Length: 268
Image 1 (cartoon, helix red, strand yellow):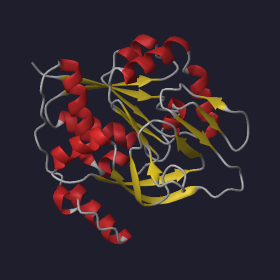
Image 2 (tube, rainbow, N blue to C red; image 1 turned 60 degrees about the horizontal axis):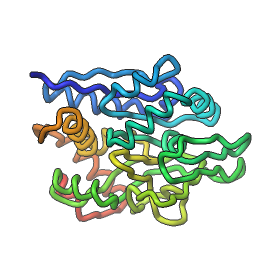
Image 3 (spheres, rainbow, N blue to C red; image 1 turned 180 degrees about the vertical axis):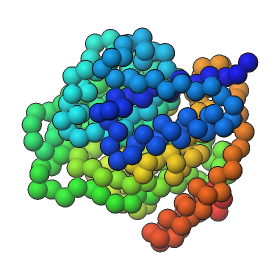
Image 4 (cartoon, one colour; image 1 turned 90 degrees about the horizontal axis):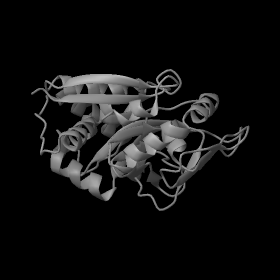
């Protein structure tokens, strides 16, 4: 029996800022290269709560404030309930920039009214105002979320460091939710407390574009493996792929940024 994976892509036309569709493509291709059947299902205005319930993995990207407001007006009722249910039940996902803000309690834009979120992640995001500098630049973090850090270390043989690129005006403050990692290079959630992103159940929230998964393919593999194990309720392990070029690119970026995490050689 060929295993199947359904990727739910949150609002592709409204929330794909800064190349975030690359995360969808990476998951799709890495699953297909291993012989799995993959379907990409747009979770947009035409989708239903049942559509959301049918997916095995969720990908959400960034958005401008106007598009984010449109999405939140649509993501209500049965659709919001389905999203909560999926994340609470462990459906894996990667949510970039605007998406974590939507999953949090609220986002306050630089101009306009507060946008209420789904309240799945215990965090709030506030844009300090039009005259405030954006958080822009290369980003390197060490994964510190306990379970994810352990899983990635088992997969790669060393501590997990993620390379990305951030571009956001909002500043995020975490409540009781666990941070995805600590900033090694860049600004992260708010440029003050050294945290970046959040991790809850099997949901990865981050400000890291880049996009994230092509630069850190082992995270894509973790998402695929977690989704398949949850769906089929059996111990599934992925066949290794030749990631030489991706790892060389990571090493080049570490050198360029003069960052020397101990995991560089472990990921080669």
